[in-house]
Image (cartoon, rainbow, N blue to C red; front, side, top):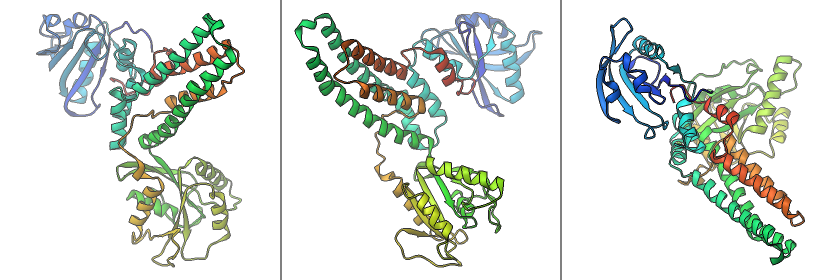
Length: 445
């Protein structure tokens, strides 16, 4: 994305038949540039934040549509530039025609996320606040929405301010030591800095990382894999949990060859269920690929549902699978109890995918294993890969500092930490990074 001085336009509402459509225009002097497309020729004189009824006129002087126009004057707008919001009837054809009429003037189509990017570049938003806008739009559950709203209203940004102030305080002490080395022997100075300033900071960042990773799971959804030997009813269990026929179910072992994924909201949080290929020894090359994918999912999932067939005794394959998951959180699901045998073990959840018996018990076990009861109203943490990666870099760099570093290396490493913190909030501008972030936004936002 470039040419940020140009006037841009895009449809900001859903591209579908609706009551109204909104087209946004941003760029300095956009009212004058677009004055020819409105029937009210004094449109460039309307007061900011007032609504005006007018018509949009084609080049051959026909009315394309009625519209309500709202203008904003820089810097008091979302983007920090002059802006227009054009409200028209919500038909797909009329919306297209109005947009094309706007683009006939000295205006270009906006890139994905370019309105929010301009708000960031014009210091109307921090990078964290900009990312939170996208998170609000894509929130999968109510708690994810609260997390995103907290980020938009500077809750998460306050963490970076705290970190930045702590690092600047450390740097100022190092600068004093560099300027006046005679006041304190460096080894003792370095030891004091590490013990009194850096170690507590490492503990703080470590806690942030743990809670931020949990927050990201809340936002994105908890990956829960359904695994087991072939023909134990994994796909039937997926369909039951989703309450729809997502996966093909047959009596033929090895039906599922690839991963099948879908999500539900369970007690207000999103669970991403993954149905997998049955694990067994096989000569079928396609099935082998599916089993390899299953083993990869086992490593990535936060919880595993190990499905066994209650109609038969524990098989060799079941035992091998239980060995495979022994270091992971898992629930053993004793399936087909409508025709098989219930288990008396507290380690098993008895279920029938036919009669739905045991479904509530399984859902309760899932929420218990994922510790839903520990999720509080404190959502003031980071919640995406970019932010968490930078936190990891901050922690790693702080941990690399030791008492034997000379003062130049100490200052350099603390400076690296400050750079990562500034990248968190977007105070240090990186065009490649921001282009990547805003390209994930929808057009018109």
